[in-house]
Length: 289
Image 1 (tube, rainbow, N blue to C red):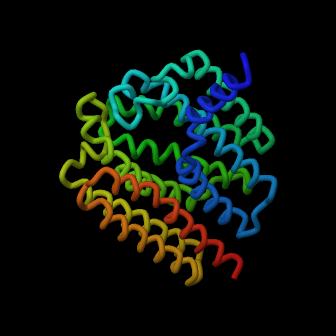
Image 2: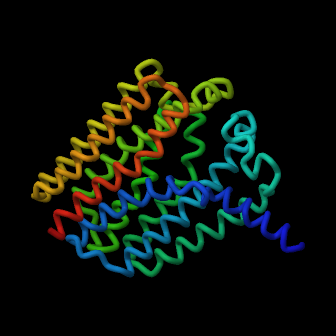
């Protein structure tokens, strides 16, 4: 195999792992960093933080590969996904399975450097990531399941730092579930017509003409739960300033999605990284200022 073919193959692997689309990594990483900040009282441990950052990249990449394996026969029918590496035969299914296995094992090896409770929780996290693609076949709101899968770094972060998972961690996880329902419904609004044709379930289809209001209600619940977290932990005003910025991001998204134009819905989805950053900045401000 010459250098050009090797480069093309590596590029196909990178696109299969969605390394060219880092938004998924950020949406996984922000809630994990929220949890690490709270668990460490703002004194982030360099080693643990690095393990979770690398682990997040590895598991998100493995999840994308597993998702494409599960959706291979559907992706070719959707305009946005028809050129993905598996569909276009740039990567074989066997190669995809091997890649997902290697990524998962690397992530597990990292977790094994932490305590026993975190290792046990990582097994649950792997199950959630691997089973999520199948929920789109039968679950009316698979985005809720995605929220649990994307947020499971929260209890793992608390476990790694404190060797317990306190009640506030589960409130934070629930907030992430509703945040995921908000941003992934925006994402699902992009593909709604194609999903209807091929029989894939999504919250955008389930909510129907109430999709926009449902997204906004999910943002409201997310912010309310984050306020509960703030009250639970006696956060200072700077934390709530971060939530206010997050609320302004959510309001901006309303104006993006209200006409249900696919490109604007996708823009709103991408903008959720700013929501996650706003909450993180509020937490950081509380602990450092």
